[in-house]
Length: 247
Picture 1 (cartoon, rainbow, N blue to C red):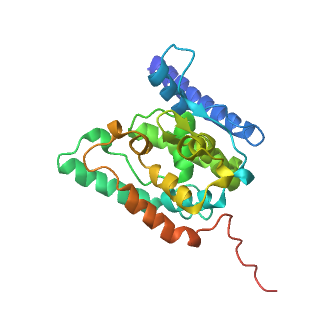
Picture 2: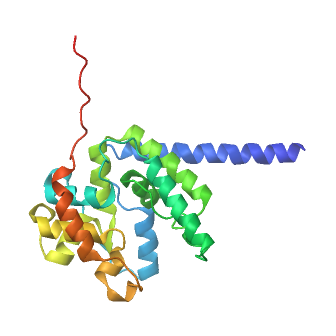
Picture 3: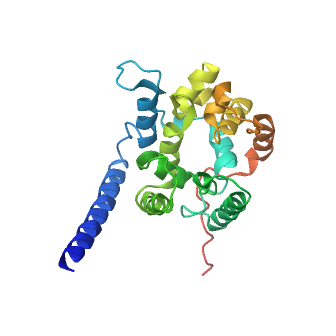
């Protein structure tokens, strides 16, 4: 029994050490910009393997140099109450879980069982640190990292890192590279229509970029763009201060 106890202790210590590593890394990002994410590195390896030259583009853009049109469009597309919640939207996760269960019972593949319901912070946690595997252990780790991100970094910084690291096409990461790739412009110069189009791409950016990644029944980007345009004016770009109690 001693060796079992020893193994359990080792596993526990390793798990704690891993969380401490994540916390320290996140704390560094209060002042330093992430050089890359786990997802970017995986994509670079997939596209380039051992080659030195590679068609993977990323260019950091400061938050105040990104068009408010783009910020609002992304919030409508991905997480309209990002500045109000604490990192997780439980109701959305429950709905996504129910849909996935229905899909499994209808004959869908089990590997798609954990899609949807993720906030911007959860997406960021996955992209920064985790693999693309979909299982309950990885989902649990995603929630822990989400909590660390929300605890250590302010909302605006989280959104800035997200906009600069999210995939916008094959080998296209961050709004700096996306604005140049699609419109030959800068993130600060994106107009309303361009912003809505880019935000509509986020659920399936490779398909938006290249037709060979599109499958039958893929996303209707035009309909998403129209929905985003109709709702951009209603989202907040900063935390809403709670009213003070009258004295």
